[in-house]
Length: 206
Image 1 (tube, one colour):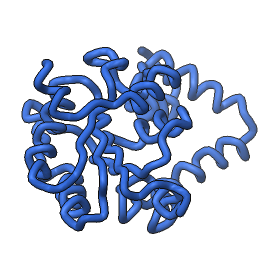
Image 2 (tube, helix red, strand yellow):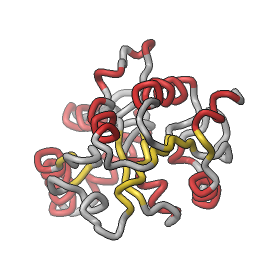
Image 3 (tube, one colour):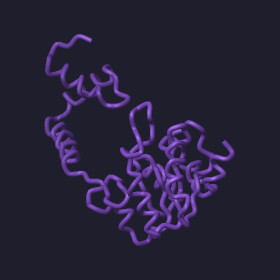
Image 4 (cartoon, helix red, strand yellow):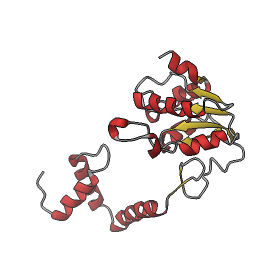
């Protein structure tokens, strides 16, 4: 792709680093920004900088937050004894959109994937195990995607907490094997949460 401006080329190359954005799409977005008032582009740039500099992670569940403890964890109307374990913030958003879950979350920050160099120590697993061993948790719901990496992560955590007096369950297989939670429709995902099954059954039947 030939550019008449080095500034344009640099902007397009930076935009193209975003997931799902190719060079042509990046060019279209950058040209669109050029047509907008400078103030609007400034607002966009400033909001991104402010987000990057000031955003925090909840000390309790590791969800993205503006404060030390996120709104979900600080909500006294939620059931803090039921913890839904998810991969990242997109899964929290997906489950929250169903309106079917009133517990709290624990965001792992990824899945165990040796091929990608991601091991248990790089995820928020230790804090989850400590939370369970503290005795404040009644049920853990495994809500990772039905992939090999997701199942491996679920089983690893299960092995760490299986001797604790706690219920472990998994979302029902209304979510197709290999699917990511964020792409599931709200009705299917909501039913998968409500119709969750004992975790032991989820791997005995695989």
